[in-house]
Image (cartoon, rainbow, N blue to C red; front, top):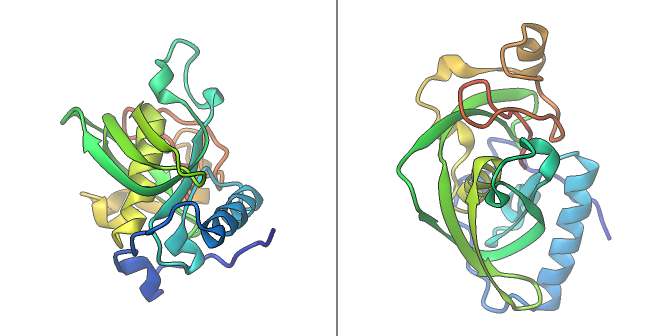
Length: 201
């Protein structure tokens, strides 16, 4: 497996619609997913989209481990490490929460972004099996964040108030974003503007 170079904001690959994948089981896609997983883990992220590694294809990886939410949170808050090819999102509730997000393509910054609380997503695994899940909480947030990348949307484009865009170390220093930036492994509440500030991708 290979560590891949992460594209940063300003690169054209991050602002175009990624291409559909005709065959989710193709060897090149399996290799891409394996390399994306290694790259995400090395960067201590919780999600990564193919355009972020300079590959304009509709594939994302993500996880929402149980340690990020309360013990009594619904099962839909959690997800194992998942590779999702040609994802489609359905909004199940119009309710939104404002939460802190970071991005490996925008290093050092965090912003407060509104996301839908409850979604369903569908797509395919690298073995060709269909995936169909509901997601809430952080799980829903990270899937929406990563799928945005496939349509050329960065989280800053979703922000209603750019005064809530800040250097993450400053947020940590002044305790304004929960636990501060983590590059992917800090916890945070996903419900309000003191929510999770992890680097999704």
